[in-house]
Length: 442
Image 1 (cartoon, rainbow, N blue to C red):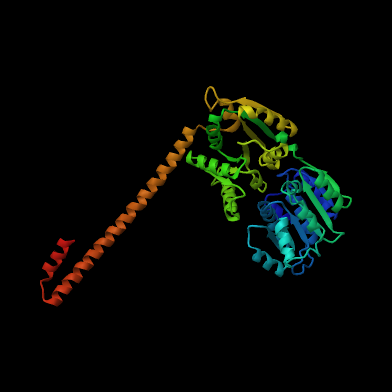
Image 2 (image 1 turned 90 degrees about the vertical axis):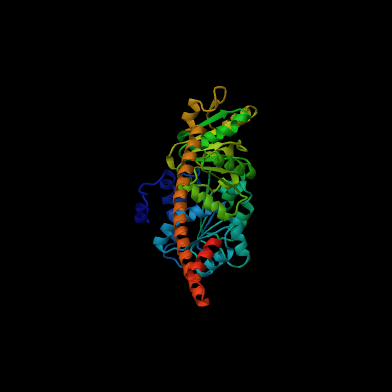
């Protein structure tokens, strides 16, 4: 494992990994509080892999389960742990909605050591008799507070009731609300608590700003900020809003795409991949879809619609300033939303600076410095330049095609003339006259 970590450039642990891994390897139950991006996946994943290595897994009976609230997070946890599972010869499988159930059942029948699952799909597979949790030695609940927000806790308790007593349990959550406390009391035995980099802990590496904008300036300001260089995630309240803003940004020359729960799993995966690879600079997302976004290098979060409450605000903010990096969180506020937004910031323990946008124009120096906003004229110039290059490439290709077609036409004309002349000779007519007649008709 250490050799593989070094190959992947991981040579020193993040604080939560240094704190958690020794206790997890010792088989203790763990209660971890750490925000998204603090390095939790390796802190529970590596001890799980190390503990399960060398054992025997029966068909349909995994020895480790990791429960996550969303399919995107399940896939990302599996992606993060797969290289280390491979070097140990441990098989992993993602079990989540929106993907082929028959494929998941087939894998379980052949034997899977660790399942990374969303609660609903795992319960469905167990109800079909395709999986059993009777051999689970280690169970991990990741992002428990989000499970609670999405209403999954009844399914989580149902699944944990199927796991035999005496095994190891690890629960990770950014917050410890009442329902999470109940889970801890019911399923964890003398847990060791590690609180590293809690939900508010990222405030030191993150600056928060509120831009008060007039309604007519909201769209241009959004476009100017989205046009910045670097990865930006934009939060909106509704699926329709995400589609509309992504379309408006694309029309303005910004490389943008939407991500929301109304899209198929294939479309969501493709959009996330494009965002990670930099084909898309601005991702316009709803809160629920964004729960699975764990992409490094997002240096700005833009709240176009206010978050529902302070927990949502902190969750949105957690998409940036990941893994010790710094980040900027900008919220747009219409004049009547100011009080509500500042009250929410107070609840979140965040000190935000306020900027009034407008009057002297949308692109004030201060706003441009904070956000990296570029003028739309500049973005449109880039877009026009790119379109011109594309048109030039197409013109070159079309010229080549035209030359090929012209050569082919000449060859076919020669072939036709030969055949007409031959037909005339066979009839006893003058071949040259026959060819001349056909040419005149053409």
